[in-house]
Image (cartoon, rainbow, N blue to C red; front, side, top):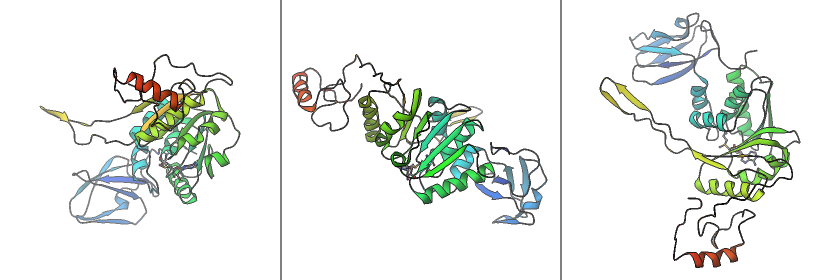
Length: 318
Ligand SMILES: C[S@@+](CC[C@H](N)C(=O)[O-])C[C@H]1O[C@@H](n2cnc3c(N)ncnc32)[C@H](O)[C@@H]1O
């Protein structure tokens, strides 16, 4: 069984193809013998595609030309049925590299949502790896399972999908890599920290800056993780035709942040940072988790009062 989801050779009945018109409008179809796709510019017969190579042009009865291509994984991830927001390909690409997903890795993922990131992880770990995905909403898990099976062409042997809350249902298997895409990943840090191997990577994908701060401080307060690395990725399209070379219109907006950190060996505590946090970072208004070297709120209030005349900075880490 080919687990990559990539098919070569002539187009066959059952293949998914994307038809793109000259204006860039797309239509996704599953080829069926004898079927016809009706457009405002006349019909396109599936039989005109079946048996022909990938990457061809077909013409509707009304004369409209369509480019026919089997979709790439990145295209399938954004066009497949979804119940929850998906991780977009630009972020999935970053996750694969910065979370260091490798062939044969033992990976935990939660939540699964629609399974977009599961598809990217499954491809990266290959048949020798294992992906154990947790999703607490059964309906979402069903959608994700269907999406993965549609892409792969059946159940993926390296994939286990558990319906349940991660903290309540996590198993005791050792983990090389952990990816959390959920509202409150900080609630899962203790549980995944117990199973991550020394040197293993945890990667949290969060949508808001409030979540970003909370998960970063939870990792620091845990003490058994390295200082988290925090990033956001923007991809800018470019247009280049003759002398007209300029940024395109497809620049990505905000999707989410990545928080990456590594598990320290059992019993090892992260060395405290030499740099002091900005004044007020953990002041009286801060109610989240506190790294071990940060005094309690009362002591912080005093030190903020002392320091304020010199420096009024508010950024948590600038
Ligand atoms: C944004 S979606 C994940 C999208 C997914 N990464 C994708 O690419 O399609 C977040 C999911 O996490 C699930 N979730 C939230 N907290 C969870 C927990 N503690 N355990 C398991 N699933 C959880 C939610 O039900 C939701 O489906």
